[in-house]
Image (tube, rainbow, N blue to C red; front, top):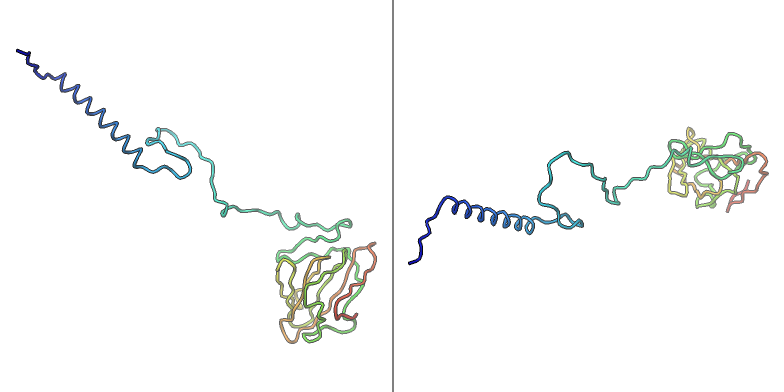
Length: 201
């Protein structure tokens, strides 16, 4: 006759430990399989150790990147050896060098009007290297567009500065507009003829 095994407290404790360990293993398996990993980083640990949080590197998408440009006065400077670059004012208008010399004006003895603006000034054109210009409006308003699509409204209180070799054009904004264009050069660079389609000095 086989001996009868009588359950004891030890037997119950060992059985409870086995079930607890099995439940813990199943819980870990469920967490790993159900919780999705962070995209692009693979599986992540289910538990994070306690303690102070460590700084993480900053991540930004390319669309959120910002490019900071230096002040315009640093980007562009005007010197005797750098004739075609200009500083810009707060509105983006080129700044005329202080030592330029006036050598010509169009038209002479009169002004351009909304109906007499030369065709060459109404489409993109440039001045020669070293040649600066001032668009002076005596009445009305004039649109002044620089090659980068920067648009200015010129008035008797706000003149336009023409930068050497930079594409630009004008267009009347009012029927009563009147203006002249003065040409300037830096000392020692010599005179130059600025020919424009339909323009006569």
